[in-house]
Image (cartoon, rainbow, N blue to C red; front, side):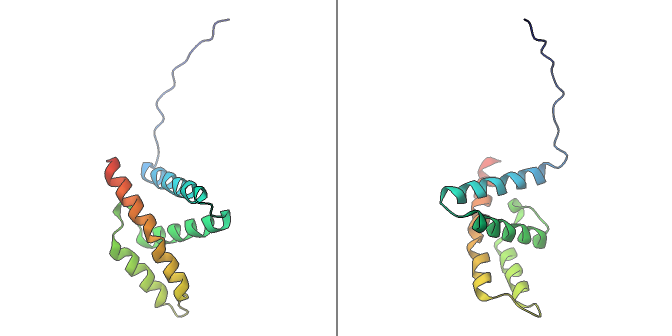
Length: 108
């Protein structure tokens, strides 16, 4: 039995930047799972990164350290500011930003 092989047209990503960001989030989750973190903790971390993404309006490879400062300052200056422990958590997730920036610079 002979099978016919058909070539497919190359697949083009409609939004390659968003696809790259989604893949970074997926790899971030894999990294956290490998360290034994629970799915709930992973979701909280990803929520924080997505929240920061919405605030910054840019992708991780464009994030700057002062963006984190502006973000957390805005959360503290709201009518009902977030708890300091929450803000510390966002700063700890700053390691995600550092990790992503280093990866994106080395992958260029």
